[in-house]
Length: 200
Image 1 (cartoon, rainbow, N blue to C red):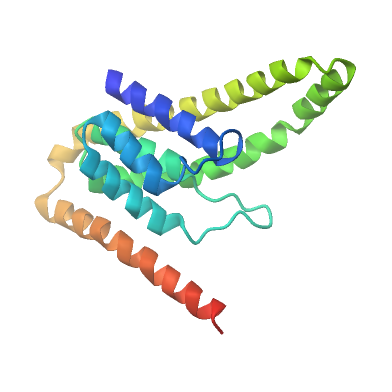
Image 2: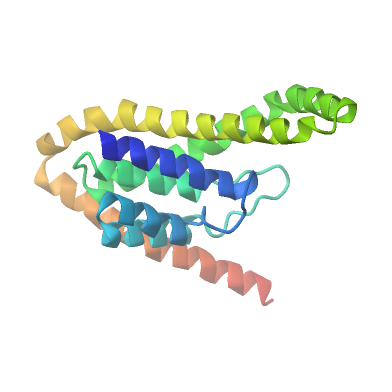
């Protein structure tokens, strides 16, 4: 459980890199996956999850009010579930769904924060020294929101899934593994069609 909490905390921190802080591409799947894999003690699975996440989400752009699924959240949920002895192929699909849901939750939170941001701006105008406090508060709230979401998904889905997985028939597990190994090909197929459209 300690490793689970550590992975959730690191995933929440990496998600801040998406827009709120740093912006050093640590939140990209190709970086977040291996980092989380090193922490979990399984660098190979971390690299695999990172590459699969990168290929799956690389074509989604934050345009026109669309918020892409979070690669950092996907990797964090996947590797946290792997720490509960859930196979990577099952954990990854939970991570993908979690990342899709997180994007919608994040959009809702951004809309809800509009009033709070306006209040903070007024406080900063009255007292410019308040800026540092406002930034720390905003980052802390975002970090806590990320952490609670990742942990909630892991506990709500991971604990029951850990009990159910040994009961899953072998043929169904083989189908899950095959689907998991098809992910990079799906991502590459999407990229090929995108490149073809851009070269016309």
